[in-house]
View 1 (cartoon, one colour):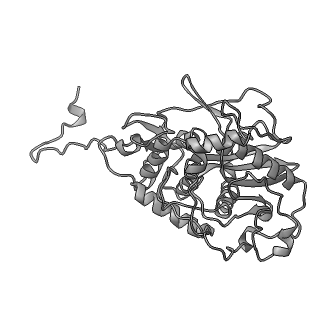
View 2: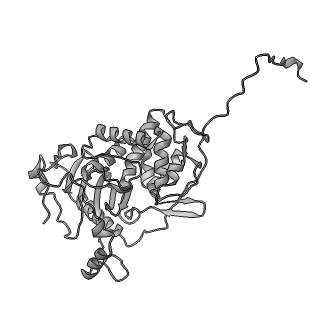
View 3: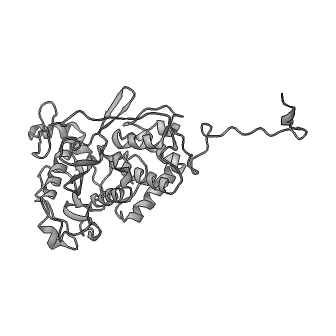
Length: 373
């Protein structure tokens, strides 16, 4: 059995913790969004690398900039030389390309493009570091006390970390503060010309009521997922981090959500009541690389019967359909369409600079309009 998390309402939570799969690698948490009641959790205050779940905070900071009037969804997001150099996943747009913030947000939610995420930060705040400062300020304001942010994309940085608890706080804040933007998190896929991009959230179309939110993966982090689902007017949110494959994170999230829908939130503790347990290592993010991204890890899983000879993970859930029930609906995205104002904080550059109005010579006398024929 995995160690139960100690909370202010430990007696209530004790009956709520789900029995864990022995192969499960990382923390998890399920919260009922009506009141923020925690239905189950495992090691939810353990520090972890967020990978592309970072982009949820990138989106939240962008929404706040829109709400403040700094930018609009039609404002330009420019791919700088710095952004264009980001490693995959990426769109690969050439430096100097410009797209609307609306499309940029769609792309980071579905494609999880690191180049576009960096460009959003630079275009709103002027630089990566300035945007990271905003991320940290919002994180503190929301009560994400176990998090620190260094970049907008989530590519590995030893100094960038979070917890399942903090990710649940963030996801809850997005749904609470910006319900008008819910569509960004439940898109089934994108189309950029002939290029099709499918949402990596495997609960979309496979789990009854699934309606968001975001996936993430790096070798140090493992496979992460924040998944939301709504049934009969009740919305639950599951945070699953540190799994060893995309299918395992989907199965675990589906099972956690299904169990959550089967229980009442009455008397359950809240996210706000959670406090870190006094145990060694909780403030040190583990590196999952050796468990996921090495030949030894592959062989160990093969020998244990957890994967087949083709590397396919042998795992399933009665709550998760084998495939989507219908063909996915794709949303069109692309460059252009940036007709809104540029952020006042965006760095000045030649692509953005306006052509100055020529200054007349001191002896210049304008021609009277009546003299023009």
